[in-house]
Image 1 (cartoon, rainbow, N blue to C red):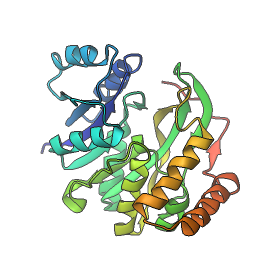
Image 2: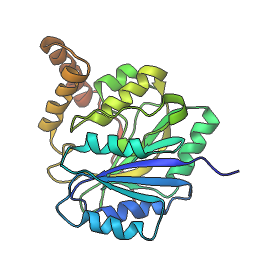
Image 3: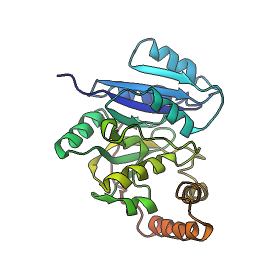
Image 4: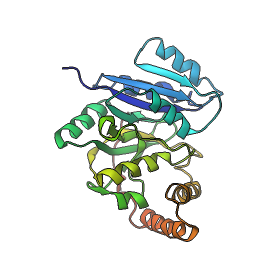
Length: 260
């Protein structure tokens, strides 16, 4: 019996330094029934030409190009519209999957009868070198916990489209992944991660994840625009968010040895 199709959603923008390695990490999966849908957000470097060459050799990889720069949310939404898999997975154009990522995660979902799961992940720097930091999460993650801290690395999340439908991606430019996982948890109440690292998250210089002030600004915007909270309520939520980050921050190990 053929294994179910997994649709991999990948937005790209000026990713020429990383996109080949990212695609190779998908091609190296032990699980072979997948499609990778790359939507380029008007790159000005060689990203498009690199992907076009790869698509000539692998029919599972599909490239779509936006006609104007619109942000990650629109790119992901465009890719989602093209997806036909039973499962929807996400991988940004500079991150990497470990070879058994899909196999292990889908097996975990099947054995535990879960419509959604995610995993731990390791951090690497812009050059691909390990930062000796593994991001973990509660083994029974609740909506309330996720509300104050995005424990779910977008590159690790997989959901079953037959259960949720295609979950709409917010058009906002930043933090739409957090909104998506909040939508998931609002329906299923709790989520369980595969309790091991299955991916590498690349922390790039000047990225949102590297800038704490930018992170605070965009998280505050989520409380205001997505949750429709007034100024006072959104501010109180940000206090809770900062408390979580500084006091109850996601667990991580500083002693891992990450190999790509």
